[in-house]
Image (cartoon, rainbow, N blue to C red; front, side, top):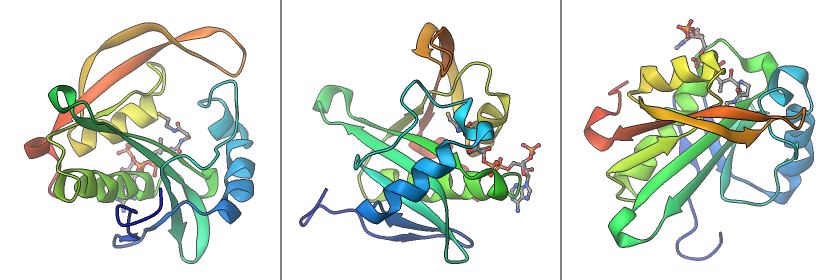
Length: 167
Ligand SMILES: CC(C)(COP(=O)(O)OP(=O)(O)OC[C@H]1O[C@@H](n2cnc3c(N)ncnc32)[C@H](O)[C@@H]1OP(=O)(O)O)[C@@H](O)C(=O)NCCC(=O)NCCS
């Protein structure tokens, strides 16, 4: 997205979220190729230039947060997706990156509701999203195709603006 509606760079305590640049795509695709990320990514293990932020930590590319908006006024909501390089896992950085983007979607883009849809088996991701205030809506059966080509259940989670964790 370019022009007056372009997303800004978002700054958290430890993460900086830069609107995705073409130059980030190759290093991000190398992160997806790592097994601990690849197992949770679908049949196409790449990102392109969709709406997203590159997660930068200490000047290094650490991961990616994708975001989107449903613009039908009657169903308006925002959504997110994330991966972090395994070298950056387990330090609360994924949680922080999502919190910063969620605050932006609610505060600046005016969304009253956000969704996220991890694989039902991705307990680490579900724990992270729950700690931000997301609640399970229900299991979407055989929702997504995994890297092995089989269909996996997904968990739809949503969050209302006033449920977003304050920190
Ligand atoms: C899912 C993913 C984004 C989570 O990010 P993460 O930074 O590893 O996870 P968190 O931010 O929750 O941190 C993980 C653990 O670090 C701990 N932690 C360490 N330091 C922390 C800090 N300063 N602040 C908060 N948590 C901290 C947390 O307690 C948490 O442990 P717990 O869940 O047992 O309580 C990341 O693991 C990932 O990219 N995985 C592979 C791809 C993937 O699954 N993507 C999701 C697709 S839906």
